Amino acid sequence: MIPDQITLGSTDIVIKPLGVGAWAWGDRFFWGYGRDYSPEDARAAFQASLEAGIQLVDTAEVYGMGKSERLTGQFIRQSGKSVVLATKFYPYPWRFNRSQLVTALRGSLRRLGLEHVDLYQIHWPLPPASLETWGNALADAVQRGLTRAVGVSNFNRQQMLHIETVLLKRGVTLASNQVLYNLLNRSVETNGLLELCRQHKITLIAYSPLAQGLLTGKYTVVNPPSGIRGRKFSTDLLNRLPPLIRLLGEIGHAHGDKTPAQVALNWVMCKGAVPIPGAKNLRQAQENAGALGWSLTPDEIAALDRITSDLHPEKGETP
Ligand SMILES: NC(=O)c1ccc[n+]([C@@H]2O[C@H](COP(=O)([O-])OP(=O)(O)OC[C@H]3O[C@@H](n4cnc5c(N)ncnc54)[C@H](OP(=O)(O)O)[C@@H]3O)[C@@H](O)[C@H]2O)c1
Image 1 (cartoon, rainbow, N blue to C red):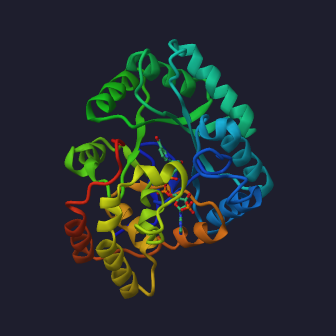
Image 2: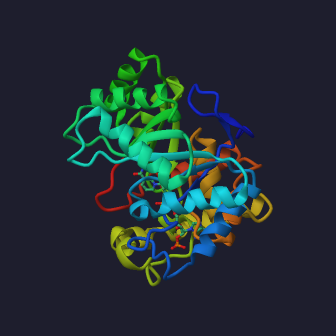
């Protein structure tokens, strides 16, 4: 059911339907880089992902204030292999004209040590500049050969259709929309974004596909995530997690001892989206890559849909 390879939007970029997220590589503030895990751990996570056949690596100029791009660039050079590199432009309030996007992209390329990226995304649909401005700026970046494809992130249906129209006038297609999607947050199913992406051949890239670790089963009401992350999840949600984690375990058992994390990632792929789980070390990267190569049955997907239909998770975060 899950294809071995997928095409990113209607581009010529072909990838496995699972990527890896690089936010934690270099980010001390939210993830504890340099405290809870080392640069060597991050490098091992990158290397293990590549060895498992994963090509898509997602970073952003804001992750670790540029550190994630620098580390990812180093890892790529040390590996001697090519990846499908995605990064993002942040529309800060002081960015309001087209040329600022190309300047920001050149900054990302310098930190990455690359001549072009594969996917350049607008991180959030924020003012003050209009979607026309950023759509045209993305088209400029493609025409200058600085990116192979363009995408958006955290765009709702109207915003996505709007920027798609701006791009099409310039002869460029919208390859992807990266949004929050996991078993605990299924709003892209209910608000129609997932279906709209399918109809328009826009790849839905699912961020936080493990609900920032909750779906691995290691966090409980007596052992919540530490720091800022711990404050995002309500006690009520943590109290209601165990039946879901049990079901993920039972389903995983039926597939040769797949873990809850692997089942949760497989579920996202079965829905037609591309999850990009973050991995802080070798073990996490290897485990996450084990979500590839098999598929949940329709009955198992239906059971997971049923058990999560009334779970509403994180405070304040919407796609
Ligand atoms: N576009 C956007 O606005 C946006 C927003 C958020 C994320 N993203 C992208 O999406 C990527 C992934 O999202 P995310 O990092 O927020 O959340 P996630 O992938 O749901 O969770 C990642 C975290 O879960 C834990 N983990 C991962 N694999 C594990 C395993 N096999 N076993 C045990 N624990 C495991 C690790 O943290 P601990 O070990 O500390 O628990 C890891 O840092 C990011 O790296 C970034 O590229 C984009």
